[in-house]
Image (cartoon, rainbow, N blue to C red; front, side):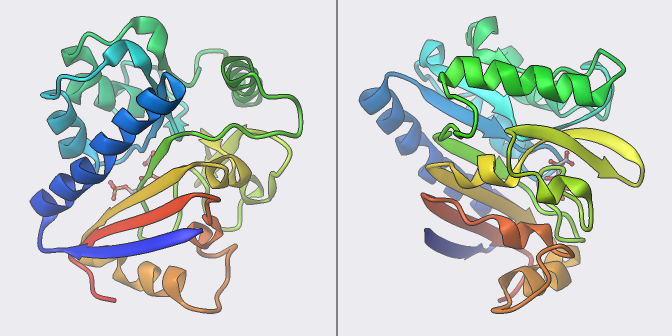
Length: 235
Ligand code: 6PG
């Protein structure tokens, strides 16, 4: 794992740095593999980055968009990560609808929807049971409790190692989430973290020794690159 940590002056610079890293990687993936697979983070920090991507002139037909996690709500719900990314970015660019791989949340059975999406990813990437696909880019945020995606402290989702997608749990509310092994199979994982309220968790995540179950972002150690883009915190 190649880990690089950068502290940026402000959110604007963080977004610009995310673009500087992502845009060449998108081109490289398309050049080398004919497509680029990107998993988006939810929450608020990445929204300006998504808005900036809407202004780019990219080979949209070769870019496939996924989500690293999703609240278990309808796609038009104000909490939906899919809704946020569509409004900020995807509805503004000519990306084929079939290139947008939203997490299903409509069956009223989160486990069933997780299994459906797991099967969809296996089909898309042509990976067999026990194997994990390598996303070109996975964007992640981090909560002030050290969670990432919907991998929350002391939840069962942290232990799942035999699936791509599982059901996360935030205060009793179900969410769909990439599993730790799926995230760690990525070619490049980029955390975008902003705000002094993340400082305490960040100190724990970056500590040499710590409690992975209490600070799940510690579990993210991708086989490729790990990039942390931070602002409003110190290290
Ligand atoms: C979600 C996210 C979650 C988010 C963090 C940070 O569905 O909410 O995937 O993991 O990235 O909670 O959120 P902020 O960027 O809003 O601080």
